[in-house]
Length: 347
Image (cartoon, rainbow, N blue to C red; front, side, top):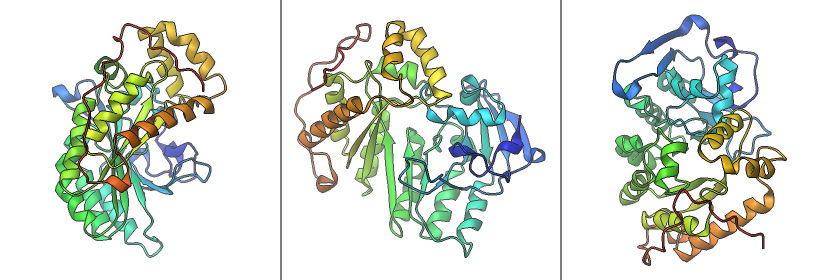
């Protein structure tokens, strides 16, 4: 593997000149336990863990910390798959099963936060791969990372699909007493059949909503990134309504929809999955994503409008944070998974 290519900027799609560690700093391990069957861990000692996001990025933050590369959540659409190609690893099974672990991330972060050059900017986590993926249960890097940020009163946010974040709830409550802490959970849909095939290594959507509920009960507002909304599979009006309704019932402070985007690396793997599970949709996807990684703006706007209208109906939003929500009885369930959802019409 090309460890020398793992650089300060490569996690966000751009190579830099200085490697974060050398090949002699890598230890490869496997563990003979059911939860890690077939997974290889590459333990590295990082030289830096604060990553600057390239200026051309669409991300609304400048700095990230990613203690892992690769992700056992195995989401077939994950945009971070391309990063594995920098190590000569494939972006399919390799991304799901070859996990790079920065075992000294908490100590390095603490040192970097204490530098006179550091200005105390917001740090985002879970933006590349999930910092609460299965490996975190063994390596326990996040408690040290959260503690370092708390001790320096440095603002930060976490985005996750992992229920393991509840292990660190007390640490996050303590951090929120001294700095701005943002917690968001990713729940794109509720369909159990779709979840099992497209996000096979993640906790069920209902369990992720339990995380939202638990944080709200401890005084930390938790938003939901409704992502991805998957065209023709989770975009039916009844599906959108059911998802937003469940998000509201969990006490989310906000809901932000994000339509599936298919960057190189993720696109090939997702289309392979689509051909196996929903071959009748392949041509429709080729047309919808003919112009690039993103669905057409008219489609994105329509989904955003529908979700925002539903959010308003169910009382989700910062102005209503913490208030009890009166949820109406559930709407009829969407069509069975075997039937093709009806494509929405453009207004």
